[in-house]
Length: 290
Image (cartoon, rainbow, N blue to C red; front, top):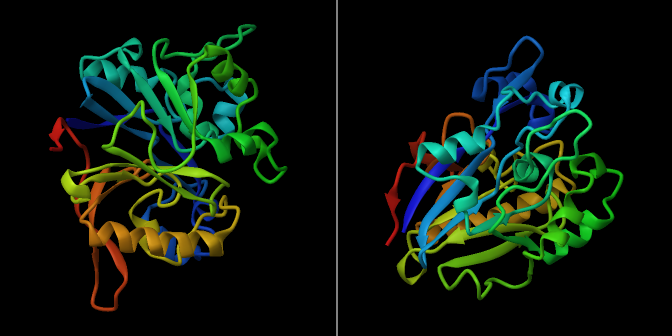
């Protein structure tokens, strides 16, 4: 099995929203804001090549489905569909992807499923031969979003996924189509039913976990740090503590979707017991996972 970090379209969002109750005087040391107080964010995906001979993509980033006014509002920087270009750089088209696993259906994680915006034209679902995997609990949330995060979902995407005939709703820690090397756990602090995917190493040791919005990047490894976008911050901190204890015990590396400067890192603790990211990798390029 080979792992690749695959970049999607990038964003700039308000730093205060991304760091919740952390004061600007502190978070601005971690990520430098621009003149509008926005910070750079990646929308990064993880490609698994050779999972039982299949190409599996974890998430699709934000994509370019937004019309201009929303593209500006949510700070999407590029005009082209960067995910498709990034896949081409490793010799693949979206038509070569056999499965797409989605932690949740917020637009910055699932928007790349769609074709680029064109006036008077509805977006089309890309990845024509891929099986789509979404946690069942989160799918139910996406059917009737709460007003608190209704704007985070993409109108019409659920129907496109259903009508594809390739939607798989996941319960439990495995799915037979994906095999034993892919295991799932769940978090409710950011959004109910968020699904965390681990690519397991041999005997469950030394794998990689896609942290999604439980831990968007290095700064959020620190337990008290949450986002203003999180539904239940205290619950998220409790979930994060258990998650990090488990990953450190099994030497599982963390893969970050939103960290603009780091794709993957190992986990450590300082002399006060605070978690931190070490051995940081800006990119993951054809890394073997036995």
